[in-house]
Length: 221
Ligand code: CA
Image (cartoon, rainbow, N blue to C red):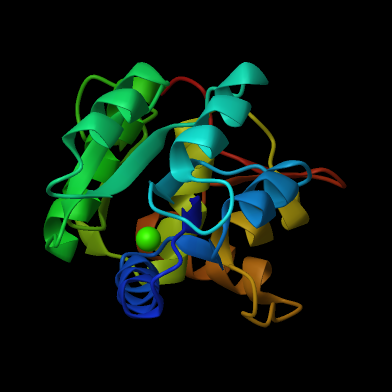
């Protein structure tokens, strides 16, 4: 999953970026509202983390522009504990939830999962297509035929991208988008390598190759 982090505080930004990376999210970090909007014009994200107190265009203004464009991207606001009015304006403006500074990374990650679940219409935290299931909280994948397998960050990110939309074909660059954030060097054969290791862990039928187009997981078991 790819995350846009909009945060001007360097310490918070670095801490959040590190925690997101550890949790297998591809993260792009921008430090003001205008850059966030410019970025959203060409890059799709699975979720946005938006600080409200930003230089220039503040977070609520950024949020309004995003929602005015009918962009339904899941969005969590990050706000100071005393900023009740801002928080209310944010929720009224179309934010899906908020976290209060200072926050524990585990809480942020749990709220992100909850928002993704709600917005994705997925009833449980488990992603599954009936053949393989993936638990975003533990990063364990289980194929019908086998034991739960612990996935690496990138294996997790790749399988999650496929399992969010069973039946959809994702190209190499779609998958790279979900695995790497800005500034992370994309190794040329990384996707092949990850598919290979996932098939080794979960069985070769779990991920299907669609010649010339990309990869997919089946829609129904
Ligand atoms: Ca701020």
